[in-house]
Image (cartoon, rainbow, N blue to C red; front, top):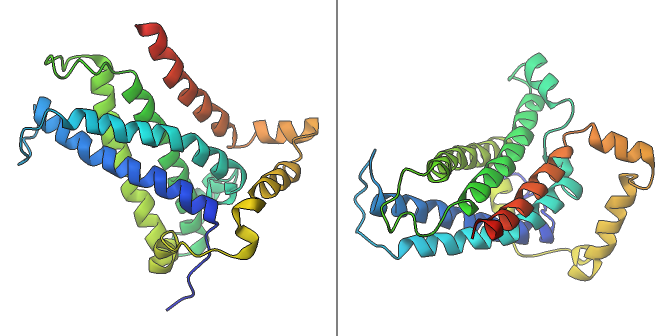
Amino acid sequence: MPARPYQPLLLRILHGVTGVSAIAAILTAAWTFDTYDARWIDLPLPHWPDVEGIHGTFGLYALLAFPLLVLYAFRQGDRRLAQPDSLATLTRTSPARPVWWYALHRCTNTAMLLAMTFALFSGKMMDSGWLPRGETHHAWYLTHLVSWVVLVLALGLHLLMSAKVGGQPLLMSMLDWRFRAKDHPRYWPGHIAQTWHQRQFSTLRGWLAWVHSVRLLEALILVAIALAWIIPIFKH
């Protein structure tokens, strides 16, 4: 069996909290839809009005953890995301070559972040009283349903590509809580500062290189999450 790759402890924590919250939100979202709507499909689930609040709680957990995962992904773990040459690799390289699958894996990781952003933002735009009142016609509710489908597809691709590229060792490495001495939490601030310095954000050239890269998505995602908190304040 191939050696299990090592995943940084901070990544495992942020990925684990966000992932568990997202999966729980996905499952309770399906139950919520079956309880209050079920216009397209009727699942064999009991009627449970309280499931909407539980879904919202898991969504809140994901919303709190997700920005930290985004910051880590685009700074410490940016090599796992789509690169400026990823599209060229996918269009000019044969799928028979491993590099093609690695590029696709990075793109699916990035798509997963965008799908999470879509789901969290659209969920925050909803009113918790809509479904109990039977108001299933609102645009943001329908948008949130679409985001659920997108998130399920993105999660499936994320897991499929992880299994394709790294197999069982890669999947299991995210569940291993052992960590190396250099990965102790007390060293995290230094690691983060070193990454910032390596990106040369202290120079104009460094900022311009960042703006022209796919890492501009980091700012867009964080702005969307911030707006998800701010906009509902002015809706009441």
